[in-house]
Length: 222
Figure 1 (cartoon, helix red, strand yellow):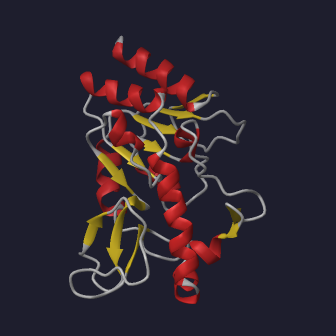
Figure 2 (cartoon, rainbow, N blue to C red; figure 1 turned 180 degrees about the vertical axis):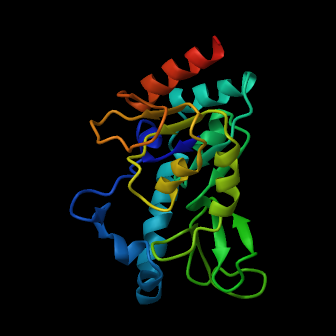
């Protein structure tokens, strides 16, 4: 299963960038790129500190809870492009975060040093080896190491569900191409969209809370 911003938006989390390339009134390259970090660390930290505070006020919605209910009958793995923890709060046990996690901090020099982090990250907050901490977010231009974990999960899937993502952000959008030809696939999204030419793909033209709840009930009744 692959989820994107659409499933979190219904919990009140502002995750979409708009058509002019801004994210919460900031240019993407200023707050979500290595160049932006080196140019203005304080701006980047302030931006993600605000996102973190916003997340802590949000709760899972019906779509998150429905996906957790699916685990009653199925072995469910969720691959998400979202950096929130709403899947986990909703009860899902196996979640792979492709783009990092907002409630964690990463050492800028030691990639193996990752910390649970719910407060602000400040200039001067360092890892145990003395390096500045940064948000544990995969920025534009950086590698997506969790793809190595995600691809085998997709290849082994007997069912593949895509929720709340337009399948245009790569490399995550390419995951559906790793499914087997005969694997049933569903794409749940409220927007009219040009469907990719993928075999056995069905489109549920609904927002996440409605479409996921509907599909999960169908799968649990099988």
